[in-house]
Image (cartoon, rainbow, N blue to C red):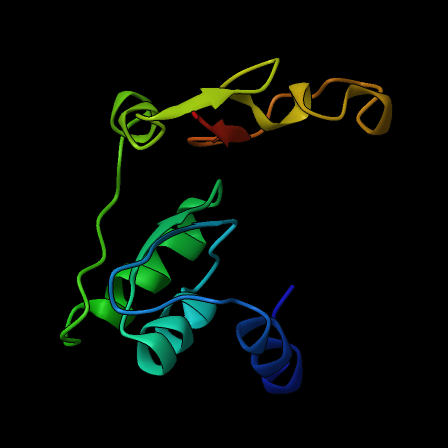
Length: 121
């Protein structure tokens, strides 16, 4: 599903970030929100998506851009949570996060991990 420009503008307008911010864009898709965040705020955005096709499109889009786009392994994504406490069930396959809504527990194709964390005090 593609986002409309209106939705993308609304989403980006709600993010409070500056040049020093690092944002994790889960389900980055084509990277359109990441590009807009970078353009508006100058922040660093790390994109994560389960779809190899979407990641390929995002990678191609970023090939000529001044903003880097980096594909990461699960271990590299886990490193991004340094300084945070992962909320149960941790960094797991996306269907494990809301099992009541994924009753067949069908594994997704590709790198399908997600996590939520709290900043350590």
